[in-house]
Amino acid sequence: MAAEFRRTTGKPLPGVSNEIAEHDAARLLALNICEDRSLGYDALGTGDREGKRIQIKARVIFDEEKSGQRIGQLRVERDWDSVLLVIMDENYEPVEIHEAEREDICQAMDDTADSSRRKRGAMSVARFKIISRLVWTREEGAIGDELWDNRTGP
Image (cartoon, rainbow, N blue to C red; front, side, top):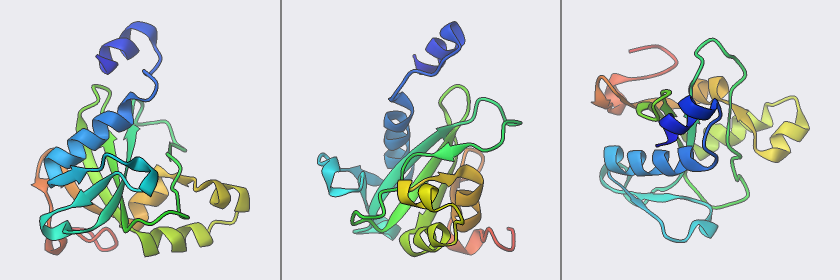
């Protein structure tokens, strides 16, 4: 429905991408979505992520050539352990999921030269990919730690 809306109007359907991303992340990575979002996280991990408090962010990539894409606000004042970024294609289908730990996100935000951007909890998709690890792809499914290190390659 969201993809059809965009094809018809040329505009994304507001507020839908994150709902889809949460559902997909929970299904693909065995997470339990939280009912109370005021806690500062969207899901609780199971299995390898047991007990982990996770924020889930979404980014739909409509134009691969467009640079400067940003992710939603990271609430650093809240209690959470990691952030998942679900990257979706123009059909709102997941392509990749990246996970960054709180410590790495806070360090990256401290390194940001623009203090207003840091205060807003803003980060580019490119920066998030640099500090995160790839945990799922459409082609491979779930990826364990031993298979991927974004700093040295597969």
